[in-house]
Every structure is written in C-alpha cells, then in structure tokens.
Image 1: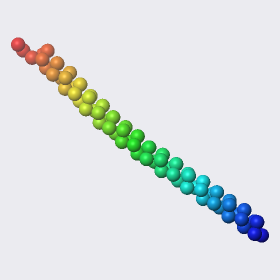
Image 2: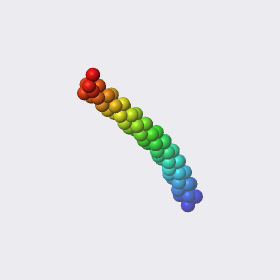
Image 3: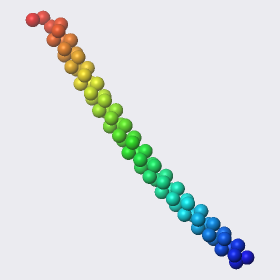
Image 4: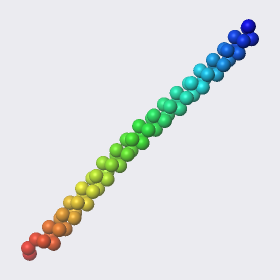
Length: 69
C-alpha cells in the first residue's frame, strides 16, 4: 500500500511538472504570437503609408503632365 502511494505521488509530481512545462511553453507561444501580430500590424501600416506616398507621387506626375504651360 505504501509503495502504491509513493508511485501515485511520483506520478502526480511528474504530471504536475509536465503541466508546468506545458503552461510555460503556452505562455512563450502566446507572447510570440502577440509579438508577431504587432509586427504584422506595423508592416501593414508601413505598406499603407508607402502606397499612399506612391499614389500621391503618381497623381502629382499626372497633374504635371496635364497642366497647361
């Protein structure tokens, strides 16, 4: 009986340790996901600014070409 309780205790400790490791890994992955989401948002905003700048340049070129001299 005592041996069985020790086995159960060891199993419980191992399961608890595995759970701690899994929770730690989950936390790491969630932080990485958050970081990647922020990077994607930053890149989208940068792309949008670049597209807007490109549109303004193209409109300016078009206006210059079509303006009477």
